[in-house]
Length: 172
Length: 83
Image (cartoon, rainbow over all chains, first blue to last red; front, side, top):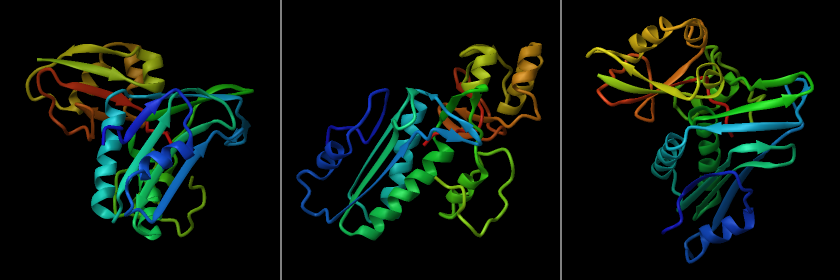
């Protein structure tokens, strides 16, 4: 396989093309799970006209590669592709893509969610939103730390300590 | 020893993309942070102890007890918000 598993890019991506490439020539695949995160026009009570996504070139790719390595060990899956955009994005734009192929759906679904939970709190990306009241850096959410903790990984990102919450409210 | 310090997001906006720092042997990320805080008012504000900050050593997330070595790449940044 010459295509890298992780891409950080300014350009948009095409779900169909990525799925086709990932499952090409692998007749052992019986399930493909994917997640796409997109830019909302509202966040924390304010309209969002655009956002800028910054990353740590080199470290970001390495961190996501390490997450994929963990997913391959934890779940019975066959291949993974992660694409994350950086630069200026507007509402409706795609931000992030995770695609997982596997023999069966359960492990593919799980690995896809695991990778997103991991990425939200452990991959060095930062969002700055432009709102009618000016630009602001997005705050990290403790709910995202709690989501990762469900997988048995405790690595707090958000400033406040994790308080156990029975609901998954606020995820995603 | 010399280390490369890099800043991202809100901290980069205050202090620029990074700088070289000269540190004694046995320096941890915590003592490096304190040394930088003492450097200027802008550093003191951006890297203030009350502020949530994460750090990486040679492009791997770590805590502030990690020891830096000569030529290391160190980064300080706010909690991450990708995805």
